[in-house]
Amino acid sequence: MIVIADTTTLNYLILIDLTRILAELFGQVVIPQAVLNELQSPQAPEEVREWFAHCPDWLVVREVPQPDPTLAHLDPGEREAITLAQELQADLIRSSVRKASDPLHDRHRWLYSVCHHMVKPRAVCEGNLIL
Image (cartoon, rainbow, N blue to C red; front, side):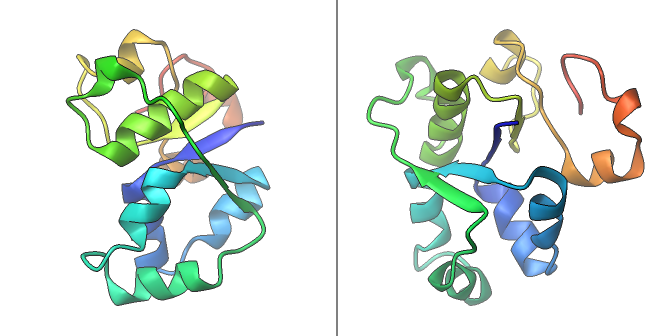
């Protein structure tokens, strides 16, 4: 299973000390370089920057040389996460993009909420889109 995460997902899971659920649920999570850059920027919370100083083995960072130009209205992390999901044919993507007009909906990607999934059995989550 290929799982992609954007900045918001990791930021909040780090702040509430629940990143371990990503490893427990998926084994491995892939993020684009832009997400890593955002989470290591001076604007990111210190706790988040420190967490990335000792990045766990289950988190894989991938370069996205050509982000999808149709996603220019999104921030770099979201743009690269969606492009990476397309390139890797990801099974799931956890993103903060939630509007029906956003590319995630148009491309039939799964919008995946980790906390939502933890409460519902996997059998319930068989649709193309999980909000």
